[in-house]
Amino acid sequence: MLRVLIAVTVAAYWCFAGQVARAQDPRITVTIDPDQLPVNFRVDGGLHLTSREAHRAVTTLPGIVLIDVRTHEETLFNGIVTAMHRHIPYLVADLDHSYDPGQQRYKLEPNPDFVKAVDDLLAELKLDRKATLLLYCSVGERSARAANLLLRSGFANAYSIAEGFEGEPMSRIGPGWKASGLPWTHQLNPSQAYKSPTM
Image 1 (tube, rainbow, N blue to C red):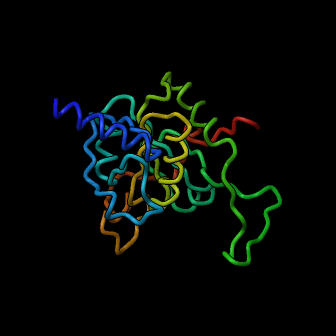
Image 2 (image 1 turned 90 degrees about the vertical axis):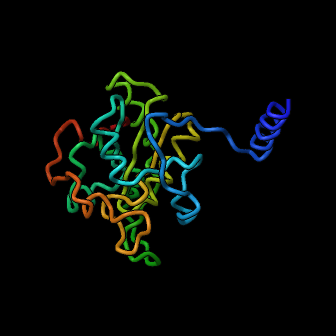
């Protein structure tokens, strides 16, 4: 009886706190403590992986989908993960290619077709929103934002690769995909290229 009461209390707490319990792929062990990540690198439900964990998952488990959420330029100049399924940028240049003097770069804005492009990819792969998605960017911040967007849009399992493709030298999580010696390339094949749902 006490266990039931505790379970109900915990469920009520999460409900009233505005949190939604997240599914988590039972085949994947999450070893990253979210409290060790900067707030803007955190994913709802603690869905984070290291590069090595992501590599192991995408190369050994069926139905794992690996998505690169970086800009077109980053994939062109910095390379991509060899096993990546699709490049779907989370941020894109605004239509006017405006310059942002504060950031000292061209303005980027959220890709309005991001969620639709992920749905289209899953349809191509004959998967649905229950599929396990692994997202990566350069250092783990944008992939966390993209994963949170997908989770809040009804996807069940959207993980962020917390150290990203490039990583950061002082990262406590890991050095990043490239510096870990995991497979990457500069060759983007046609099936990996971004397919805009509206163009």
